[in-house]
Image 1 (cartoon, rainbow, N blue to C red):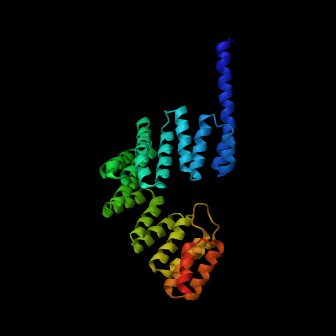
Image 2: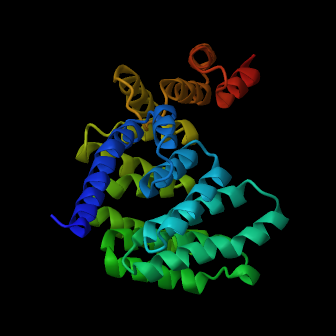
Image 3: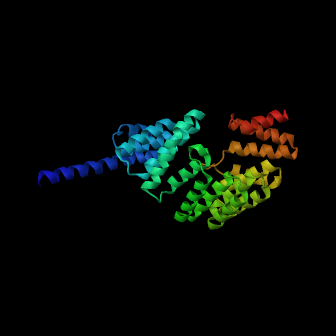
Length: 312
């Protein structure tokens, strides 16, 4: 074997070994073991993939400025990956959300530029288009905010993914307060995919259309009896509206009898909602009991504290 091919082989083997090594770090990250994953990738921070995951970890830990620095570094290593720019935009945008108005004005062009580069590199990158929608619907006009561009971008998404397109259009219309149009898009998304019934329910909840919210959440739960979020939201709708108390109580009690699932509201939250229902029913002893039980599980549950202050 000549020297040239030996160098190529050694390079290939080193790249393969590094990829296998980094698999462990990725597994730690995906398991939610952020501290362990961070220590692992920090030891191999010279690699592109390590830098990317250090950025993702910092973002998950809500260290947004630090995350942006990592993504800027990884883009210096490889400026041809759309996802790197998406996460750069996400990080700078989240950091801007914590900053004062003056700082936001400085950061805004960087956010917009990151998402624009993402979709320029990969026009089919839905996350990049979503990032632009977030920007267009929240930035002032002098910084490039535009309802027209937001709707155009939502229609681009619809051309790539019909379901995401309905959701994108619903988001744009809702933020623009064109509620009839938003409702039609939420309904269309739910008809296309029953899993989007939750989003329809949240829309109705936010608009205080509680009867429609009950219908949407009940349909979501009937479609998927394992959907604990839908079950909880039936109870929450009752707590917010003061309607269908018996149904709300049964739903929340069943929610409490089920093992808590990651990503769903806490049992302390469910107890607090039960307190709200009993309070609206005029059942002070049960309301106080459930607010106290909620605080026993989560002393920081503000709505339970507020409930007790009203009743004691």
